[in-house]
Image (cartoon, rainbow, N blue to C red; front, side, top):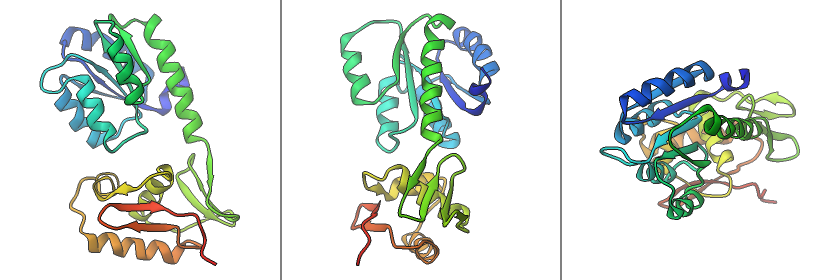
Length: 228
């Protein structure tokens, strides 16, 4: 159970009585619990806190669970999302595959149906967080510490530089959009292209080779092909 204390969870449920009961259970398990009464409030908390896990009801006012998941997945492919529903519908399974959801849980939520899903999710998170990404022979990223190393020595990056490079590494198979960079690195503060380019310029001077590639009018991508 102590493994759960390493992670944070956002719980979204519009029924206040149900939310209160389940929140007591979840708050004892996780390092931090964030609560929301509808999808819009849940999305605002997600953007503010970036929880490791989201547990959301499917039928909610303002923004339902599936629409919330689709909105999150536009820019975030990694956050674990679990959806609870009062109905069993095969169409939901298609959404689960498309949106990379952990599971649909049929209500009511109990330790019997919730604990196996949370346990598996925690194990998956542990695997994701405890790995190294080798960028070259002597250059790597350690996800457990969120630090970059050259010859086993930590590269001196400021917070924005580290977050930007980490974002590219964790999404190394695709282009990271300007909007994602603004959200995850500038924390939704205004990001000018000049300030972004300046930060990238400093990063390029600190890393052993230029692995940052600009994709015109889209964003940036990790490029591990060294130019001879």
